[in-house]
Image (cartoon, rainbow, N blue to C red; front, side):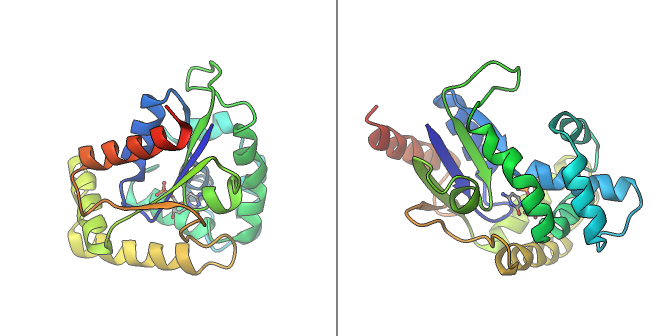
Length: 220
Ligand code: DC
């Protein structure tokens, strides 16, 4: 059982993906973390993010446990980590280097503690188009950029970072631009995906709608 959940930054994919994974006892793969790991490793090594060759080398060399270790860094989810991930994820060489690792997860999905799972929820930008084009069910989660920026701004302030709405909105717009205009695997709604605009209903209702669609789709 493979479910893909794609969409732009701040749309609420993480919350909805975690809900689906927990409710249906599926492993969860947050694919954004592989790009965050590569980007942050470059920042930590003081390497300019425009160095494509270094980014490719980093993507080829980083192991999954090393990525999990980088995820503990305070900047993994800050503006610094987000910006770095957005830049390196636009490089086709980096995407190619990380493709197999992401696809392999569906062959032997495991929970965080290593125990085997019967399926996987992929969360990302290209999981329904490139990583698992043959997924059983695909969702496309979106919301207007102003709504997404406000949410992200609130989250960052809550987590103790100093920022403001205008800064987050500008960064969100340039991330959208890079995600949607890059030549390799640009963000788009996968063919056959169910689209949900998370600004239209409360989160609990979006969860209930997704559960209904999953139940109907798999005959539960
Ligand atoms: O979902 P996120 O914010 O953690 O993603 C970090 C960056 O990685 C984001 O700028 C887009 C990129 N990304 C991608 O290009 N493809 C994916 N499947 C997931 C994330």
